[in-house]
Image 1 (cartoon, rainbow, N blue to C red):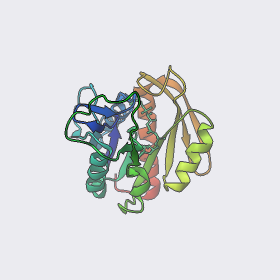
Image 2 (tube, protein in one colour):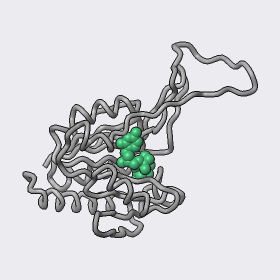
Image 3 (cartoon, helix red, strand yellow):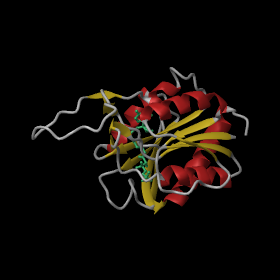
Image 4 (cartoon, rainbow, N blue to C red):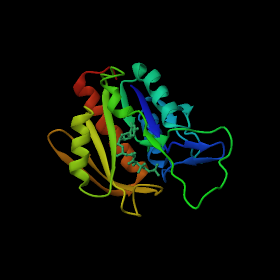
Length: 216
Ligand code: PMT
């Protein structure tokens, strides 16, 4: 089975030397890629900038901005049986990016932002993806409710929800605790190293693929 996995943060340029980003280390997505290879699958890892080593045995496509990740996923989705979008993609980017460093002027400055393309939300509609679709939900409150909303709106088969208000799991931690939100149920994967959580998610993805009748 061929997995397309996204990982890490994106960087949205403000000027040639500054950017907007977030605290994603890429660990969750890289563990997913390793777990899928370990289980005998083929993997394309589309990754924002991280300091991690590229996992052995994966095809690797580095990107920087949300738009680059959008284009990469759009191009590669037709070749995947399952897609797991664990990247922390910027929801907004600066409207105008000057090609010179912005100089200090007044005491305040206003940065105008615009929405980036919704990669997960485009998979079924714009990209015509019919394989197993697994999204992530990074929430600080009402975690399961928001995740279920994403599951339905973005037509996912499953959403992996984590509580990113906690410092011991989620962003830039070696461990995670997640809820696997399905249309008819929710399963808790208790706190464990991301390597173990990733293996469980790949098991669930493989089961979903078998149910859909994808070639394994
Ligand atoms: O990288 P780590 O340090 O290991 O941290 C792991 C993690 C916390 C980043 C990971 O577990 C996680 O929660 N990833 C999703 C982060 C996120 O941006 O969640 P969200 O609720 O904002 O987005 C929901 C889904 O839409 C995600 O699948 C995201 O990849 C996707 N998305 C978001 C914005 C956008 N423009 N396009 C998207 O496809």
